[in-house]
Image (cartoon, rainbow, N blue to C red; front, side):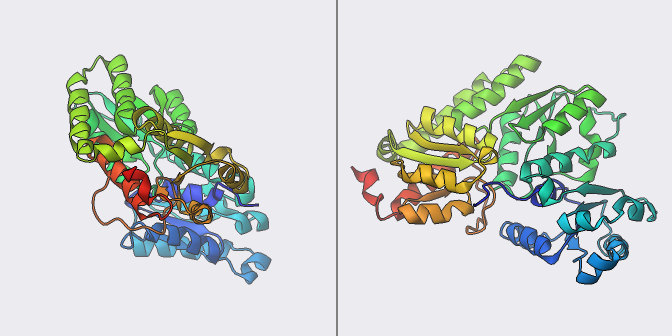
Length: 396
């Protein structure tokens, strides 16, 4: 069995590691630390803001509480973070360490937040949900804001989601100047977390962040809506439409500009774009990305998605592979985990979902907005042209 979703601890790490002036302390074994760090370093080797107690055999026998206390004090002294996030894994939960008691003995101005993230208690999505929810007590209820434009929080970005940093900036540009982007969970600072309560609406990437959005609505009265990842013209139109209906804004000129930019850019390869029409395609990704990408591929490129799954709904990745083998898919959209399946069928893999650890991007390459849509098309064409079995498809 190959689980399609990741471990709960990885989810909590993805939710909290994105707090740019915070530090994540894993109270777990060395494998958890190595696994989470290796996936993160594939995105940014300069940004190492995590540490680990590295639970030993003696900790299992005599308790890991002393090791945890030393690690917390060392992390606060060495990193001097704005916030410290303690994420406990399977072993610490099984041996019954009193983590709350340990943290209560450590005094200081730096907030220390604990999230239980044992892998046997849930998957990566539950870890993300509880990681974001743990930030709620850090939010201030009385926050003044001078900007009168509608402020939008985004909930649902993991720290190492591919293209996330560039996509956030693309969204910021898409909604400006009529609206402003507030706090992005989790690509923000602790100060931005504190000020998240002054937003006018929370947009939640479908299936990721509902707990925090519901809690913020109950505590601060902030309404929330679920959205798909806003790929292409249809995704942007959906995003703009929600802002127009809720705040009475007008994005008609933005729509025209976006369509013109994409038409002019894609027009230079219009025969290649035409060749995509009707091409059978497979897609495996997290819910909001899966649904947003499917809509883009089918409605804007005319491709046929013949094999589809949302990662969090798939119990065994082999079920998807079996469906993939029985399909006529000529192209696969997914994460680095799907490379084996793509190699087996000799079809190209286009990276759109977490994790991506076999591809490096050193320049700004969003997949959203006008430039982002053209970058996405480039990635699709490049994947096809490099594949022996599909190389001629664009020239037919």
